[in-house]
View 1: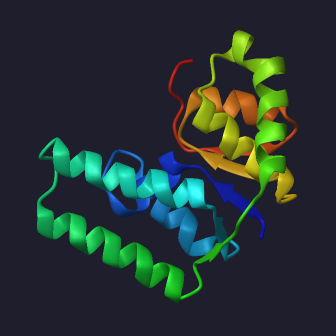
View 2: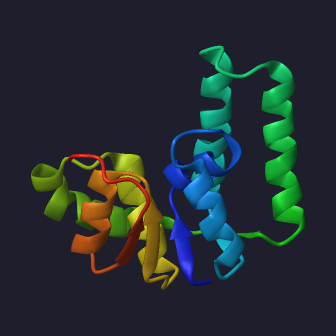
Length: 149
């Protein structure tokens, strides 16, 4: 596996936003499969449910999103990966070293720690702080959004 995509990227694949077209084009050329950790799957499902709660999508659209995600897992676009307590140890080190200067959130730190533990050196994100954290941790970053930190 070559790329680790954070939830901002995964959500843009299934939930239309300003980055969706760029990410979909990139995905057509990307080396697959992409890893899908329990954290990534949980956050992605949460993003769908948040859109439903905010009435930005209908129940039928939410069901279709979840079905599309499962279809992509079944088709091998994603490979489910599991991590253990080493992920949290790695994340704790990142928090101690970088959260006070970057302002990264705990779940973002867990994604970067996951990429590091999976020995994936290319991190894909739409989040400016996560980009900075991933770069600081030594990862090459593909960033689809140039939002201010």
